[in-house]
Length: 61
Image (cartoon, rainbow, N blue to C red):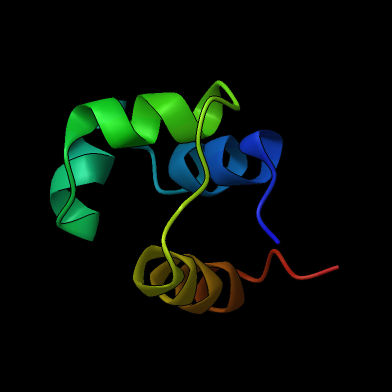
């Protein structure tokens, strides 16, 4: 499960703004903003993309 803090960490590791990150994931800016503020959760499709990024960036704990 991706917490708001984990999503923000992945985005910051990629050195992207929320807008850039949203474009990279193929979703709306507001979705990234809501994920990072804990107001909604990523869809399964977005979670898979985040998991791939987490692995690629070496952020798995």
